[in-house]
Image 1 (cartoon, one colour):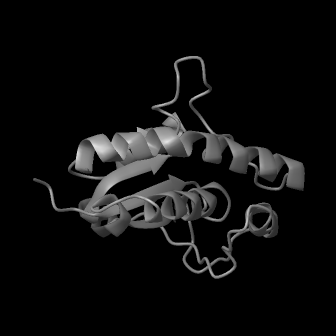
Image 2 (tube, helix red, strand yellow):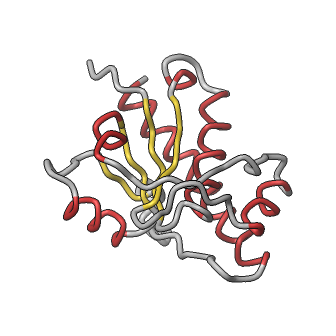
Length: 159
């Protein structure tokens, strides 16, 4: 059995969507039984700089659901993170394509965060960068909506 226990949430700059996804997924996994509750969740960006804080609207949107991401600092997606990851969850097909094209060997364990949602659900999560707080809250809610299906997938794969 694969002993990798790292989950990586990926977006573009690692300051909006993936920090929210990281914290929401970590919160959900903490309520699970081992081995899921023992998995570590981190986030990164395909075009991220190192050390940027989460956007103010991401912080506010998360505070509204009782979760704090004020200490988040961005990081680029690296070959080391990919190598350590049991699964990588991206926000868009473009993120998946960038990772598949940019890393050798091509990672196989990349999934859209909303990939396991019912067929009629929109599978991509649009970038709220520079948008209003309600746009960030809608983005957060799309992530929240995906969490049960992601946890069910992880339970099936690693539980």
